[in-house]
Image 1 (spheres, rainbow, N blue to C red):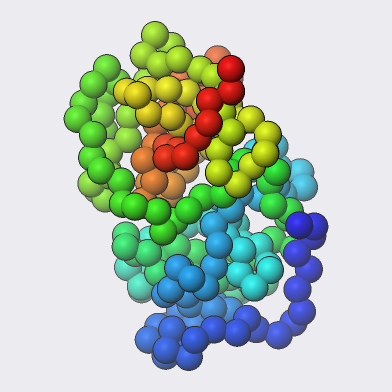
Image 2 (spheres, rainbow, N blue to C red):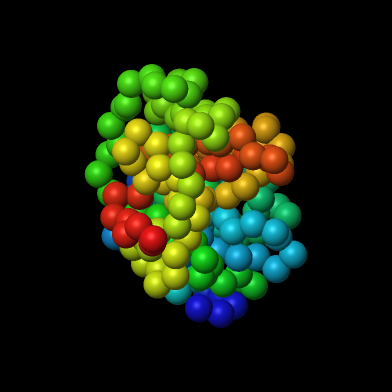
Length: 222
């Protein structure tokens, strides 16, 4: 998919979504309560070194900006973004409201797999070799500080033909989502991904922190 230039008209959306969230639809192009109205993906943005979480709506690409728990907080963020000229959509998720910004020059990342937001809800795992941290959302993620806690490899995951970097931890396969240099930035990304219902593992790397997402369907590459 190339650049997602879009017309000036608003996105089509079910009227019930807009009517149910008037404070959001005042600024957002669409308020999407149904998972069937968008597709999760990763995108590449010119000038940005890493792929970012995104959704595709009617062929247009939107990057994840923020996840917030309350509608009033989401409305304030939308108002601020709208005042600076951004175009946004909002998705209603179990943990609150995800705000996405239109990316006219983005393209779907060919090196990262599609995120399936509607996949089965993740199950909490017991503490093992890594530290277990619980966010306010009650979604645990594991921080692995030693390479002895996991082993690396490559695998072919759903939606891609080429192998991607993976790690194996507790007999589960995790594909690389992002490498972040700053721990605070990494924590924000982890929280946003976890809020979408994904099981996350974080590794300490020489150049920062690796954020890995659980893969239910992966074929190991020897």
